[in-house]
Length: 143
Ligand SMILES: Nc1c(N[C@@H]2O[C@H](COP(=O)(O)O)[C@@H](O)[C@H]2O)[nH]c(=O)[nH]c1=O
Image 1: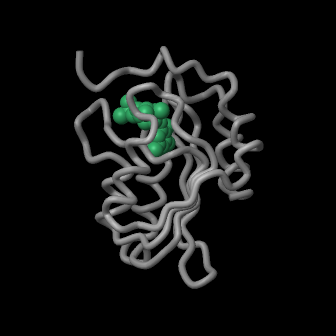
Image 2: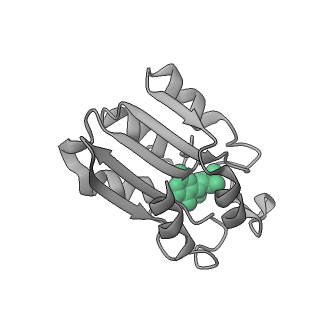
């Protein structure tokens, strides 16, 4: 998680209305994928990390600085769906998504799909990444 937070910190202030997120995927003690939210806010960190990990994401643990999104404004599969589809065994989240329509959605989906999901690892350090982030600016999926 320390590495995911350091990665996210490199993008703070460069991701527009989206928070800067870091994601590290670990399989058998080895990092098999890493990603950080793209400049301007997309792609999301988990998309990049999962693409890099490929099949090695199966049975892996993902460390994510922010709750994986539950819905995309583009209608594309959300990061929580992508993590489930990739067969990740466990997701460790530092901070919850502050967006009022997204809070809890990603974590609920992961758990409902049988993915062990732990919240709050290094949450104080992660919160520092998101304190300048204003949820009202988030683009809502519809309407
Ligand atoms: N940047 C970021 C997230 N940002 C979250 O995703 C939602 C908006 O997504 P969209 O408008 O589709 O790009 C919103 O809830 C926002 O807080 N989520 C993640 O899992 N990973 C990421 O890297």
